[in-house]
Length: 119
Image (tube, rainbow, N blue to C red; front, side, top):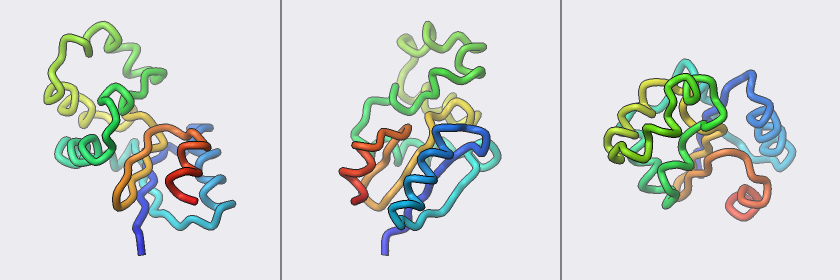
């Protein structure tokens, strides 16, 4: 049976909606607090590779740390390795919810995307 990991932040309204959607659809998952137990660099690299998504989809661009650090201007000049290292320093930099299954990784909650992958 597939083990789905759902990295979320308890005060994030999008995460709450996503978890509600999973529950309504009877999908079992392991809930992980992205703030206190965020993925390390090696794990993020695995997720990024598995996802097939552009690395920019892994950034929480609306978060306070992202804005405070001025990352919208800095990221284009950074290598993927530098971005992954920085992303691993703070779970609040990571786009959430981050849903990880055996053969997919989804960033953010887009119901149509989740329906395609999970139902």
